[in-house]
Length: 603
Image (cartoon, rainbow, N blue to C red; front, side, top):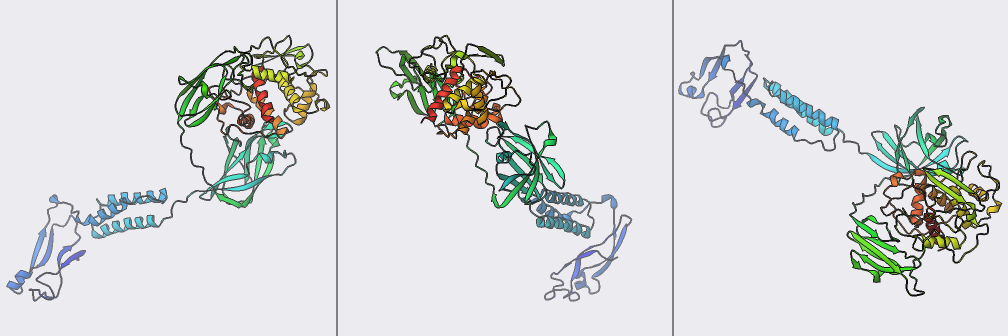
C-alpha cells in the first residue's frame, strides 16, 4: 500500500553527522505516514523500523506488525484543518472598502463554502484544495475594480426652438447652467425653469420629454416654490457628453392639447464644464420669539420666530393727535431709546415690546410717524388697496363670499389736491390714517362718496389698475381701445384698462375683463411687480432675506413678484410671519402698500 504522505524527521539516531544509527546515518526515515483505507479494512500490515533495537541487536530493528481497527471507536482528527481555519479567519477580516457590493458578496460566499469544507475534508489534498479555493477568492476580491464614484458637474446650455410655433420667450425661462450626474455610463440631467410671460400671460412649463434613440421619455418634475427657478425637470440618458438633446416641452397654455407639444434642441457648450460644488449646509438657526402689543406697532423682521442675534427695528406710528406715552421692552422703560419713532436692538432672547399712546395736550407737539404704513393691528398687514371711479353708479361683485363695491364718485376726474381731507368712517387713530391722508391729498384715493373712505372695503381689479394708471404719469387717454364686452364705452375706467393691457401688467383670455373681480394679495403683487418691470424701476432692497411661513401656499406664478416686493419693503407679512396669498386686500391695506410704493420710488 502506497502512503499518501509521510512526515520525515532527523534526530540523534539518523543525523547525517552525529546519528547513532550507523545503518541509517545520513538517511531520513518517515516518523509518521498517512495511508488511505476504508471502513472495510480491519487489519493493516505494517513494517516498523526501531533504531534503538537496531543498535542493540543489528538486524532486529525492523519488525512486522498488524494494526487492528475498531471502527466503533472512530474519532475525526481535525488537526489537519488548521491551515483552512487560518485562511477563513484571514478572509473574514477583509472589509468591503471601495470594492463593489457584488465582489464583496462573492468573497463572503467563498468563506461560507470553506466553513462547510471544514466538516467534509478527509485528506490532505482535500484540505489543500479548500485552502487554495478560498485563497483564489481572496485574490479575486483584492484585484476587483473599485466602485465607480459619481461625477457631478455643471455645463452651460441653450434652448433653441425648432418649430415656429414655439414662443420666443420660453427659452429665456431656462437656467442656462445645467447640473449633470455621471455614473456607470448613465448621465442624469437636472434642468431648471422659471415662469415666463407670453402675450401678457404668465406661463409655466408643466411637462418635458427627452428624445433618445427615437424614444420619448417623460422627465420627473420637482417643485421649488421658494426659488426663482420654481421647477426642476430630471431625466437620464445612456450617452455621455452629447452635443445636443431633443426635447418636447408642454406649457400650461396648451396643457389640454398635447399635440401642440413644442420642440426644442438643448445645445451644450462643453468648454464650460465645471465640477459641481455643493453649497455647505447652513447651520440650524436658534430662534427666539418677538411679541408686539399695542396699536400701530410693527417690526422688521416681522414679529414671531426670529433668528437669535438678528438686528430688529421696531416702528411705532402714533395717530396725528396722539403721542407715545410708554414704550417698554420686557417691562423695562425704553421710551428714551425711540428715535424718530423707531427702536433698533439685537434680539438674543424672547422679547415682548409694548406701546401705549396718549392724546397730545400741547399745540404743535405732533409726534406722528412717517405715514408710510401701519402696525400689526387686527389687519393682516399694513399694506393697502385702492380704486377709482367717476359717476353715480354702484357696481357689486362677489368673490369667495366677498362683495366689492365701487362708487364712481370716488375718482374725481380732475384728481384735485386736498390738504385737509377727513373721512367720516376713518378715525384719527386708525392704523392706516397717514397712508389714507397721503393718497387722498394727492388725489390718488379720494373716497367712495358721501364723505366715506370705506377702509375695510375690498380691492377690485379695476381699482388697482386705476391707481397705477394715476401714479404712472403715462398718457392714459391715448391708450388703444379694448373689445371687452363687460366694459361699457362710457365706463370711467375704460382708458385705464386699455393702458394696463397695452403695457402688459394684466393678461386676459377671452372677451371679458371682469373689472369688479376682487383681488387676492398674491394677484395684487403680480400686477404691481409687472408695473415696476414695465417702468424698469429697481428699488433698494431693504429686506435681504424673505421667508414667509406659508411660502408653500404662494402660487408659483406670483412667487418672484412676492419676493421682489417684499425685499423692496412694499409688502409685508402679518404678525405671525405669514403672507396669506389667497386673502383679499382692504382699501386701507392697499393705501398702505401704494404709499410705500410711491415713497420708495421717490427716494
